[in-house]
Amino acid sequence: MTEKIWAKWYDKGVPVEHDFPQIPLREMFRRNVEDRPHRPYIVFRDMSFTYHDSNVMICQLADSMFKLGIKKGDRVALMMPNIPQYVFSLLACFKTGFIAVPTNPLYVVDELKEQFNDSQTETVIVLAMFADKVVNLLKDTESSVKRIIVVQSAAAPVEIEEHEAIYDFNQLVMSGSNVEPDIEILPSDYAMLQYTGGTTGKAKGCVLTNANILAMSYQLNTEICGLIPMNDLKALGVIPLFHIFGFNTSINTCLYTGGTMVLEAQPSVENILEDIVKYQPTLWTAVPALIIGIINHPETPNYDLRSLKGIMCGSSPVPVEAILKFEELTGAVIFEGYGLSESTNILTANMVFKRKIGSVGIPLSNTDLKVVDIENGIDEMPLNEPGEIIARGPQIMPEYWNNPEETANALRDGWLYTGDIGYMDEDGFVFIVDRKKDMIICSGFNVYPRDIDEVLYTHPAVMDACTIGVKDEKRGEAPKSYIVLKAGKTTNADEIMAYCREKLAAYKVPQYIEFIEDLPRTMVGKPDRKELKILAATEKS
Image (tube, rainbow, N blue to C red; front, side, top):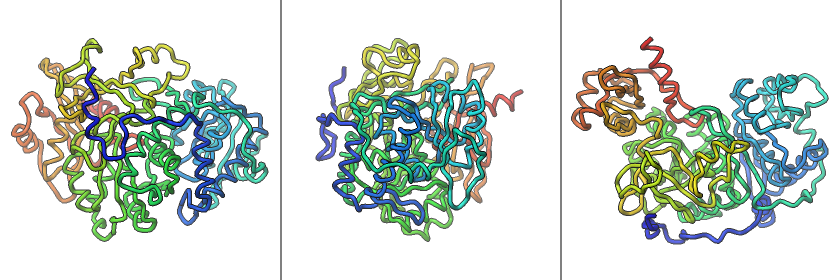
């Protein structure tokens, strides 16, 4: 295996190996409550909750949930946007040993049923406006759901039908006792079932232990604190908390730092701009679509964004041009990272002060990473040669929930096989080429959509772009690029192809160009290639 050639690139104060404390997550939160009881923990709109006040409500909720018959190890789904009650519910799970099942509230009934039945979730905590879907499952004899806890919004209450198994969140909080749960929780105990998006088939539940999440908290936040001191950390949370990226960079960041979360439940570009000016966050977690959106928003020059010191960006690559423009606009540092749900979110990240723009950084502390042959999964590739990325470390899940076959496929000899194609340079920096499943094979040549997209982003008329492979009679597959133009700009397919021919090998030049108003996106802002492939198939038929 390649030695840790990247170790010399760690920022000062970032260790090559952490000696993690052997404690459960609830102890990290309890330390923050004791050390900084009056510091704001959550800011949401015009409300602010201190660590002390939050802890009181969390303990009361946990006590009432015990009284409902929920036990350590039972699965509890959290089905809410970025609101304080999501955080309170998750911390109540951490305090009691309930296993949290983060859930997208926009899922339809069939998707919810599949996830809940797979995890055998019996309790769902849900925002009232989404509760009707869960009520349907409560009445479904083939569903695992046995009780619902409804979170009402004071600004927009929703009438919920009465049922002996439906409870009001606020009433449970008010009726519970403010006592720390007296139950043993070990670092090895399961804390969350983080379901994958299911873009490659049936969604799988990534089992994340207390130790996995604690390790990630230390691995990530020792790096951030080199830029933003713990006492100054105020994280703007716009990525959904039910997604591993949103959880890790908001809730998990504050577990380590004792910082403040500013939550935004409706992350439009306009709302984000307002939040930055009003609440003065120092850390913002973004996805490329939001960064590009702010760069191109006509009102952005009227907002002072200089409170931001660091921007963590992930989910998909940020075009290099967008990084440079955004940093000029804000004065902040963008550091990209890479990972997946199976790794509690992050495997590699650019250091704050030592980075290579265009790369996703170097492996985190305590993390081994190598690039292996795509075909046999064993032979290590030479530096600068692409292959499948595999990794091991304390943040790697122990298994998929109740799925030994997929576990055996993903975890081999202690290594996580990511399904992502990338390469490592001579300094140990990792560059993501593409998803293994997204690779296009044109006349026997491997073509990576990202290579094409990076070129398209440099065209002066292009605001957004995404390339997929489509069937082609002569070449087997051919690249097709979907393009969103900047406001007021015009071009045509012939001009785009000519532009690409100047910058790409002939077999990489997109054979088809289609201009659309917006790219379809996943819930965390990634271009949704699955939807584009469906669209392309429909157009051909």
